[in-house]
Length: 285
Ligand code: PMP
Image (cartoon, rainbow, N blue to C red; front, side):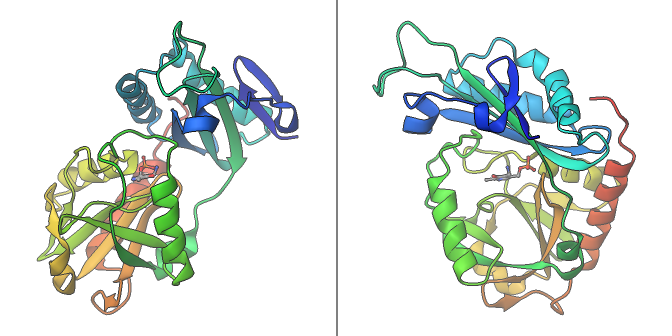
């Protein structure tokens, strides 16, 4: 049975009731996290919890029990018999339910806290083959650093990319590559890996942060610098990162085939380093 967590209780998914006045539903007034359980441990749970704390702080949503979540997430995994499997845990915190009004409820109401877990292994075929990504203007707001559930701009762009046979979209803002609709983007030029610096125009990905540390620890040149979209023709290799896919090679950006159209050497190296780091994970969070 699919068990979810809602406001302090574990309940079957079809018994989880959320008010139609919930501000997450009405306004997208909520934040979320997705973390990966590797059949015995969460990868970088601290990183995910710190980012969730930051998203809550920036949106002024108050969830006093956030420190209990790491244990709760493991309980959720176990209640769904996913202890030995690769799975994703989703947690969403909304500002709560109140009559519709753009202004925050006053007095404040309790946040709605929902979490669920589902079995999902990483797609290893994508690691071997690589993916094609579209290029599109970045239509999002300028607080992409907040992991908000208000993802309509990401969804519209990703769907259009999918409709045209691409698996991700490479967003361009003011002539510079920012990130994907659900991943961070890394581009390799002249043996250096470039990725957009942390700012309000990207989400600070947990996978991204770990890739940056791995590059530094292993002598791979990596610069957190913006890359102009007009240098795409000179890019030899690229990859995207996110919690669900880890490090996924990119073999085409728009019409531009990268290198010989197979995953690049530096990408493969970083992919292996990341895999090793995951596999060395211990069952603590
Ligand atoms: N950017 C965006 C817009 C995303 O939605 C995601 C995935 N949540 C990422 C980057 C990658 O973040 P992470 O590595 O923490 O999954």
